[in-house]
Image 1 (cartoon, rainbow, N blue to C red):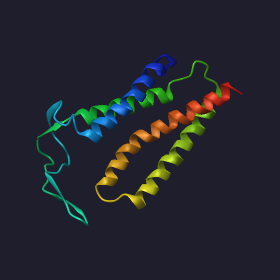
Image 2 (image 1 turned 30 degrees about the horizontal axis):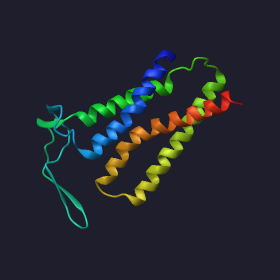
Image 3 (image 1 turned 60 degrees about the horizontal axis):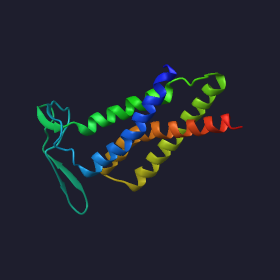
Image 4 (image 1 turned 45 degrees about the vertical axis):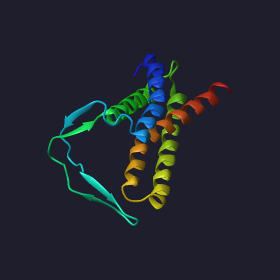
Length: 156
């Protein structure tokens, strides 16, 4: 990808993450952009007890109404993160490619390390939230590590 998209996609990526976290945590946009959707899997009600969460009933394979703010924000974060991560630099050479590969490898190690830790500390339905956040953290780690390595490279 051309380097001219890097700056715009970076702004979109880094500004959308806190907006998405706010939307996810606050549930304020739950009734915004409500459309009829056709889910593969869904649930009607979750009963939480002291020892477990039980999903009762399924709305899968039928039309339901759902607010799409969280889904749209995740798509924006993923697309802008990929464009920002893999757009060429102004001066792209083999060393930049090597730094990019090293950053991607380190971000994968960090991301899967967090999943392993969360696997032993977070349980049941809440673990799904961790996996959703990992969609974003792998791109975030990669971008931050790569920018740091570029900063070190240009200042040495």
